[in-house]
Image 1 (cartoon, helix red, strand yellow):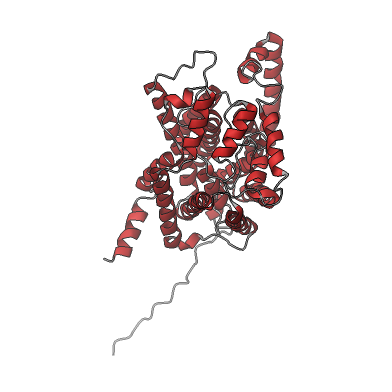
Image 2 (cartoon, rainbow, N blue to C red; image 1 turned 30 degrees about the vertical axis):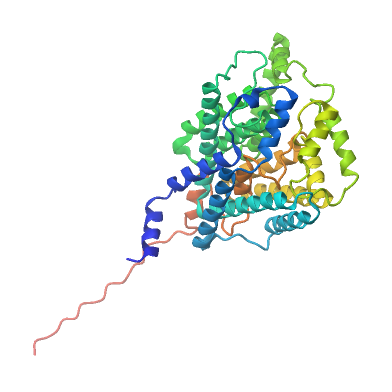
Length: 451
């Protein structure tokens, strides 16, 4: 038996590559997550700046993790050639254009070496996502996103418990775990939406993913991230509009309207709004975003088309400048559109908006054709990136804890096969015509006379 035959036999026997899934989950944890420390919970300005500068540095674990993801994805992409990416379609062409423009932007970056390293890690992440999308079945991808997000969230909870910072009963508490509050909120959002899709993709494990759905929502509320809560509302509305019937839509709108009216009449809405708005914190200037955006536009006017290079704007000098002007630690523009203008200019911004619009439209078309929930999930995330990106830096061409999941879903829209969902699988393989058994006329027996 050859080595190729042996590997194919292992793949046939174990449909879910659980060992590779565990390693990928560990690699994603080491790449972008950090174990809770005292610095993360120190609210002084100097501590915030030190934490942001430390987060900008690339560690050995960060580099090894993305190298592992890229190598594994490249191997899978070459090995499983039956489901190659349709390179001549709009989404892959736009992604290649984004990569090319980011590569060109290194020429005018302030620190070309740092920008090159970050771009290399970004390319390795895309290769890993492309190989995984080509190798794993659609249901496996949705289940992996849900389970991996839940594992990372659990490690964050354990970290806060170990550091004695898990105090949700206190008024000013915000759950962070292994990430900043807003990023952790968005990861909880990904957990909730992917668990919702996994409930439809794998009915056998529906109860497990239902618990993970509630798990993600509970800790999303504990992060008190208003942008993530808004993104959750948008994602749930779009997902149910795509996957449910008209009768369900009417019942959902009616029940939400009656519930809202009942809460308003009983006075509960005021308390809920105080929790969500954190007692009106920053309501007059969007939690400091408006002064931040005014300062950012001063830099954008200097380089409106090209930007300052791929992930090279937030250097130590710019961080200290914004901290002195705004009196709080800043390492992002808190808007994907402004962040893109600072990083890759108007050209990069247009390309990123284009790939999100294409992904949203393609996801809707593929879901209507196949009823597979992974396509609805991809469409929801693309729309969330477009809408919630006005208030958070959740842009496409950047490394973040949830970027791998996004590209994994986006690249499933570009494969040369369409996998049907559980409710369409039976009809997809059912023959369209009825075949009746063929009646073969009996041949008359020959009676041979004796010689």
